[in-house]
Length: 252
Image 1 (tube, helix red, strand yellow):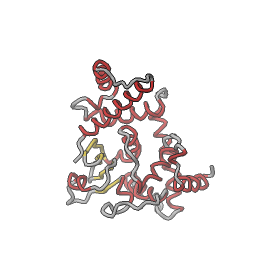
Image 2 (spheres, rainbow, N blue to C red):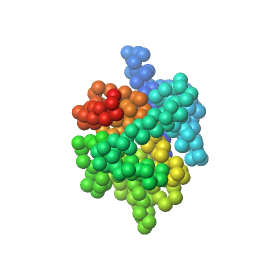
Image 3 (tube, helix red, strand yellow):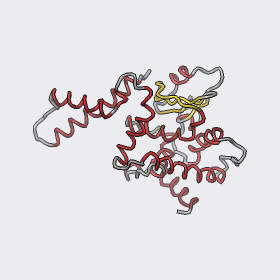
Image 4 (cartoon, rainbow, N blue to C red):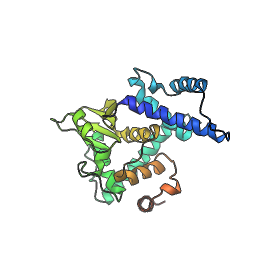
């Protein structure tokens, strides 16, 4: 079972690895950060990443979006607002795209929560990956969203998930975002329309690899919603095909 402590360790480990790489790049000698370097790094990490502090549950949801801003567009104070606007634009077009692909029905009679759930479940088929999900996962959408059954225990479900990836667990009145088997944040169900943005943010923050069964979808969201270009080495044929069909549909 993965704990949030392990996720924090991953963040620290990645930072230390980067420090070693920087030091080695500046000298021909084999060198590692000194004790003072590590202590200074630890102090700056806690200042820069409030989530590393104990009792930081209340700041996780704001911290992860601010961290995404630091990664993608540090100098833009309106980044989060711009990101939400970008998602709303994509979401609106995707509703028509889903109907066009016969994956979504008309949404005129659906409330916001119902529409959002239907969208998240349909997105992996709108932008399909060639790799099938693990057999005990079921539909590819289960890699990103799961509707909890009335008799289902969320902890039991998380522990038996075959993929270590951010997932949104939807309950009767609230939502829980987890990474692997670790619950990270909870929020009211009526705020579900921005849940995809938090899922994407956690991939970036903890340097997580996209699950192969939804890699095409997440790559499209990365380039179209987050405006973060896909490097040529990661631009798979399925991504190029899905993006081309999407661009053609929206007239770009």
